[in-house]
Image 1 (tube, one colour):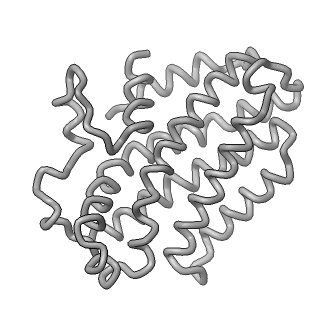
Image 2 (cartoon, one colour; image 1 turned 135 degrees about the vertical axis):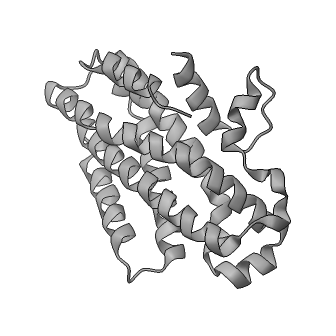
Length: 217
């Protein structure tokens, strides 16, 4: 259970200085010791986009299912369209990155406004759908944890020299600073998934928490 809270904290505040017991164990997710000038922006961009794509695909899939579970089918269709947009190579890397962040942010706001996730009241059909979101949510969280270190490095590199970063990365450099917000968003939604499952007595909630507890940092 402690690991679940630690994972949540890392995602909710991934770019803050953390004065916590056992901080040394978190250095594996903070690779900035070499200094901003050492950042390989071109190579980092490739790794960042790959990690983000994996994270966002799972995260959006989980959000789509959750939205359908609470009867928000129009919003679920928007997320589904966002998934397709992110897979379309005709769209620029910057546009795909920006759109995925926008879609996931809006979907999260919608989910956070759903009363049944706070006080219960999901239909039987909704509960069945809710459980189906768990595998993608777990995979999305794991992928997001893997996204943290490379995103920290790239945010630091872009912030150190925005003009140089733009010349090297193009429009993607303008979107990279928004990734910390995306990561925090994933952490918030994971907490909502758990609290919503508990509020609705969803079968499999304990298994979900056990699976989160087994994730390795």
